[in-house]
Each structure stands twice: as structure tokens, then as C-alpha cells.
Length: 261
Image (cartoon, rainbow, N blue to C red; front, side):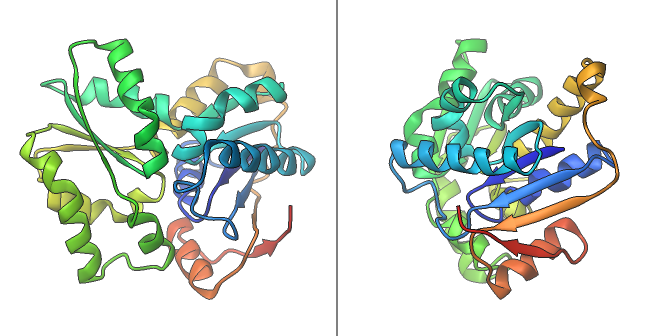
């Protein structure tokens, strides 16, 4: 079983991407909706939450973990890999690899939560592979709450996205990394505001592709994963809006189960 966790609803974009890449694989998802967003929390708190989330998924039978949260990926990856001896995937490296393949001018923009942008993780990883790349980052703290509220098409959301993207647009970037798994739900607005010529990279689809490649090259491990086409969805708090948006992301109604960690 593939275990996936996020601070809230955004990680469901990773679930959907994995379903598209690996149809039939059993999955279990935990959305920490009671403690979202992670982007405004301290590093220690994010690490503690990530360890708790992973422990829960492992207890439910997960044999590999996907950190479907850029904030957790930027701050807690080393802690999880030190404590858990199973494959652990983060969403940052796959997005960086894809962005470097797509960019023509090595001029890359990154948007994410305050914690992700403050960590500098995207710039570090991009520069490690291409020291000449120019990286421009922008924190977008209001976007996660807007997605969680289901404000995916509101004029207020369009105005806020435009304001956040303006500094990157003036830099004439040719590639933009969505450094938060909530952001693919706003991709139509983001693409429109940043311009049709800018390649927009989703960390959700990038990590799903990496997992497919990993499993193809690890047949013994792949055989340990159940493939009954089943998916379970757990959250730490249930709201009507979450249920509605979750069904939109997964493309069919889903049953949510509430748990307390």
C-alpha cells in the first residue's frame, strides 16, 4: 500500500496523479486538516507533525510514504528517512528535475508557502544541478487557505494570484514551479496570470512519475504492494467544503474517515 500525507486537501492532487500513473495500486491518504496550514508553522512543529503522520500511515499498512506537502518535504525529509526504513518520496526533487528539463533560458520561478520559500530548498536543489540558473521565489501564504475554502474560481483569488505572480512575471521567467501541492487546483488561474509562454510545473505529477519509474526498477519491492484498486482517505477534521473539494480533485465522491493522532 502506498501511503500519502499532506497538511490538508492539496495532497489529493498527488493521489490523483498516482492513480493516473499507477492505476490499480492501493493507497491510503491522511490529510491533517485540523492542523493545516503547515506553511506558517515552525520547523520543529512541521517535523513532529510529519513523524506522527508517517507513524499513522505505517500502522495502517503503508509500505512506502509520499510526503505530498512541500513544507514537510523541505523541512522533515531527513528526519523521516532517519526514523523509518522504507521508501520515502518528497515532492521537491522531482519538480526541480522536471523544471530543469523544461526551461530554455534557465530562468525559473518558484511559488510556495512561507516555510518552503524561506527554506531556500528549491534554489539550493536547482543551483546544485545548474549553477548558472536564475531562481526567483515568491511566498504565497493566502493561496492554501483559499484552496481549502474552495475559492478556486473567485475573483478575489484571481486578484491575489495576480499580485503574487507580478514580481516573477517582471523577471521574465520561462518556467514556474508550483511549490505546493494545493496550487495545481489553481493552475488555470496561475497559467493565465503568468502567461501562456511560461511552462508551469506541478510537483504532484512530477513525483507520481518518479514513483512509477522507481517501482518499474524495483520489481521485488513492487510485488509487495497490493493492487486491488482500493483507496482510503483519512483526515484529522472533516468539513463539508473539504468533502466537496476532495470529490472534485479525485473526480468521484470519496468517503472520509476522521482520526485523531
